[in-house]
Length: 139
Picture 1 (cartoon, helix red, strand yellow):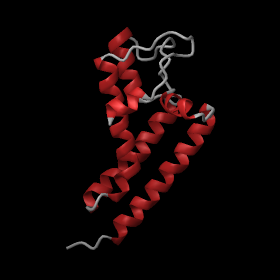
Picture 2 (spheres, one colour):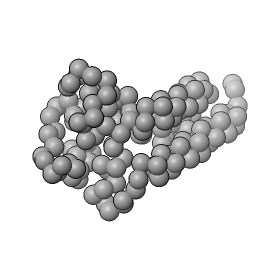
Picture 3 (cartoon, one colour):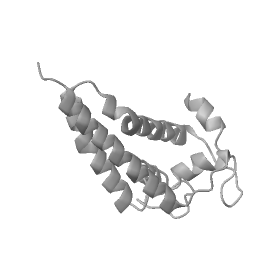
Picture 4 (tube, one colour):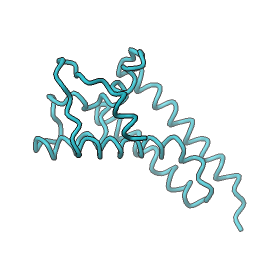
């Protein structure tokens, strides 16, 4: 699935130069997809403890993303490994993960639109997890 997702990414960046998909970028892309799956499907966890951890982590993920200017900590770790700096303005992927995924399917969303939509979805997932946690009867 990861290989299929990578094949659909654009082959050129904003400055029309080739994007390298080396082992590090592919691994961190997989981490991004795992985090997206956790945020999207975590409210379906069947245990109260798992839902409790999810309801604690989800706001932390959202706050980190908002305070970091729409960039994931995974992007920052990649920048630290590649350039030795936490934030690298030359990286076309920093803060543009969802833009990179939406551009090939023709969705010209701004960063503000993406942030608003994702925060709204995370709020819905958080409320769903709380409701699910309440409905689980302790044994």
